[in-house]
Image (tube, rainbow, N blue to C red):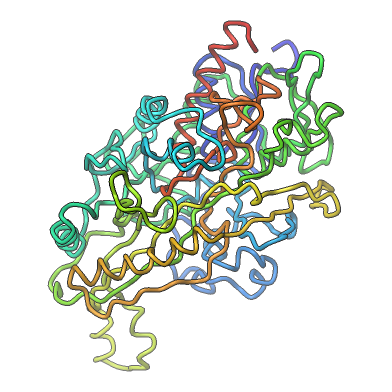
Length: 561
């Protein structure tokens, strides 16, 4: 380029959607600058704990007291540990304001949470895209399943998704690699479930972005179940293993870590963005980078933070705020409720390796033609059957030969399932800019004001009771429903705050993920979501990003951007 600070496109963020944006735009010939606020992480070489065994950690992987003190939010759930603290944000550097409790778990580094995600990968159904319109809430999606289907296929073929073809209308099939297997107990439970509910409830292998055969230059999954430490084999989809290599191979990508995007630069006369302002996280120097198009893929809340902080005399509430929807309609998936049980028999059976997925029970409530429950939308279950291992002996206080013999044998079978339910897009669940509190770099932080409401509370009753009912119907023993502490954010599926919609009056983005107020700015991460469905959203981000990038390049060619 004539100027080292000028590019065809800027991508803000390097997680799942940012990696896809970089891949698609570079492969279509654009010179792209990818900006990541955190450090670089190189594939294979920067996964420091991926080959370590439990006994190599001083505290066997458990969080230390100092970690707990330094990370009051992360300590609320599993992300705080001794094994991969290098992949989770330092809370003291990046605070937020909890008007109401919100567990915000972040990863600020190249690859973002694509290195730590749960990899569960499901298409949305036609019903999901129509739900808001049918229920008369929030605002309708401006696109439908028919718009997304070819892009789901496109993303799946590159990412590599394992799963089984089931033909379920509420959970459309993907382009699958060979599926991982249910174990013997799960297979029997699946058969019993189908028979007992006359095919109305199904148990299938959990669909995941783990490759089961060599794919796009990557080695298939090794069944180590260490995915969130970074996989040196490339056995699961991440930016590092899947989208960054082809983007780099084009010669069109410049990656700049330690680059905090503070605002989108806007020309009010042209009604277009001209680039972004960047604060260097190491030197605190400020830079401007120019581009014809900007893709904000910083994750849902951070993309919205950038829009808030891009306020001008045109829109005092931030770029994209003209509808009054910016920052509103924050969603997540609510979970930590379900059931577990003991399984009798099968003592002569075991399973291979450490499968990196479990089973999935697709949504069966509030489907078309069914009797309506006293709440809207529905839920699915993730779970697994397994045998307890050597650690069960710790509490026995045994010694000597009998103790050693006992813990060398697999323990009894058990089975558990946890529901993931849809959260409705409530206008009052929102984020705002808190200028009274600053982060390490002197930037204002987000104030988060969101909570579960009556609809979710009613749903959670079914989420527990239905799980227990299914396990009892399948002959499991000592069935125990449970509900654990939950707050929004814990699902790590934050969505909304810059939603797509049908009109500039009801949304921040149009059907092509363009900001209504600045059509050369695109947002295709979780911020764009108009509703939440009950399935993991990452595949939808991939498809939306590929679709938006294709549109952006076509519009550039036409001279519309």
